[in-house]
Length: 278
Image (tube, rainbow, N blue to C red; front, side, top):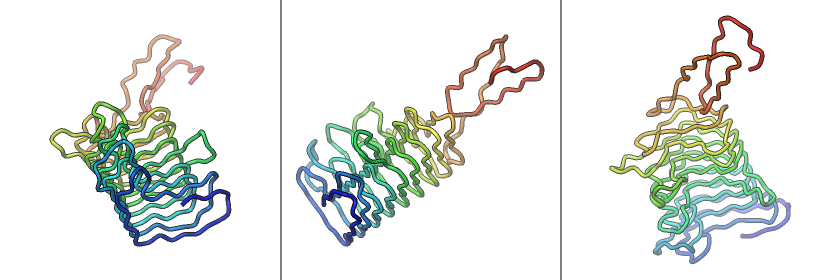
């Protein structure tokens, strides 16, 4: 389905079963500008049963459309990303399972993706994902790429990162390329394989900041259970992750400079003297 312009439209796709589409996305809704599309995709199955290669498409792709509800679906064995929301706003996704996405391809692809492409008109913001599962995917289970104000709640990433050994983009949840003001509530990143393939359970990378990961679990991931880089980001109450405490800082002779290289706030107590610049 392709549309252009900004006129409000409505669609309701329910009960779809789509299999084995060669060289394209199984479901594709896109426009040349951001469309206020009021629609729903529910009770669906997208499956590519063919041998995977580098030319296959995504399971479900939304590009520059807003106000869509996606619920109660299974996306299995697609070559590219299972569900890709590119430059979308106010899209709600719930109870969707992504299995074996992005396997055996040239590029490492993901389970669920929120993506803001800055080269075109659009933004990825205010999207909500709840009760979704990504497992056995080639790259990240859930990827928040340059998006803002998105909410993930009760989502689970299991044993992803199956392709591209040694590469990045193989975590359970990854926020990168200046992803800001996003929140993950009660999400779980688990890898119980003998040789784990998920690099991190939760990974914040590049210049991402002001992201909040509250509750949930991170267990068995290969590099670390979590990595946060933003000075104003926060991770708390995640079972399996022991947060880093404040550093031990020895104040030297004036002028003294200390650079904080992680997202943990430090406490420096000056008992005597004058502080001229903080």
